[in-house]
Image (cartoon, rainbow, N blue to C red; front, side, top):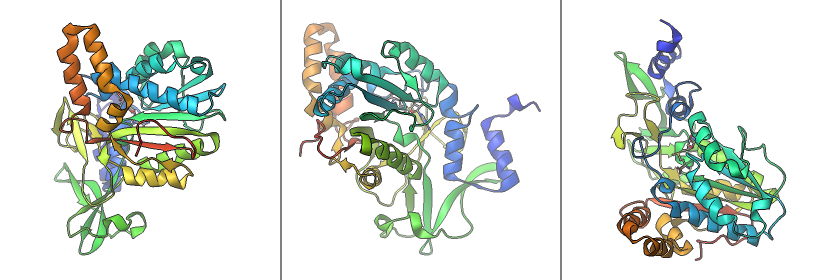
Length: 360
Ligand SMILES: C[S@@+](CC[C@H](N)C(=O)[O-])C[C@H]1O[C@@H](n2cnc3c(N)ncnc32)[C@H](O)[C@@H]1O
């Protein structure tokens, strides 16, 4: 059979037949970023016609608030002659286009801007190129490829897309969750031997039989790496995502296709696989890299304190025919029963800076 006819599922099944079950993290990594068949390598998954919709695609005001946040931080940093603005997983470039429309109103910011984009998806990178050409973006394959100047990092729904590991408690010990084949069908299983507990911290000590410790190791390592770049340069990272404030037992792996939940094992590479972000673990990684972590806030509170309600009111006044749609978009971003509470905002920053939106 020619290689082209093989689906990612076929390739994964062949690997399992050859080498035995693979860890959930390996499976998730292949599903998302396999070079030719990974979910984030082949198509634009965003929007009504795609698999999910993100905040910047709901309303321009989301990116605008982040633009105001960037401008405020730039001025707090003393309006440096040069600074890097790095976006992790910029999607269609919508957030950054909306943000820069606002941020470049700060005197000097446009001239000082060195825009870097970290993106794995060539389809989305092409859209970013169209949207952001005026700012001369540079795509980097390694976050270390940046200048030695102050650094501001933005990540909306990026960390949830990194592979997780899961461990299940059985007989008082932790066993790693794996993906294997039973009667030719992909099935979750467990490692044959228990895991030495290095990774599984105190937060999971209360877990009872059958409970799961979900460890976002890739997200923690990535966070640590980026924060270690910020620490000597000065600056901040803003991460917005769905997730929990405290580490603890529970499982959140999910697969989304066409705005509906599907079986994560059914069609590898065809559905978005994500997990909720463990913000406590990310904040710890930031502190270990020498940054401060502002107290976590909900997306609703963050956007309210940056003026999103007032911005929507001004847009509705200028364009009364859109008032209803604007109100619906505002509610979707801010209401506790929509994105307002599930989504949270973490800011890791250099000591001495006071990022907007996190007042205690
Ligand atoms: C859920 S989308 C969010 C897009 C955008 N931030 C937004 O809010 O619309 C995740 C983004 O991260 C990118 N991405 C996912 N995994 C990645 C990886 N391992 N390295 C670089 N980019 C990645 C995707 O291609 C996409 O641009």
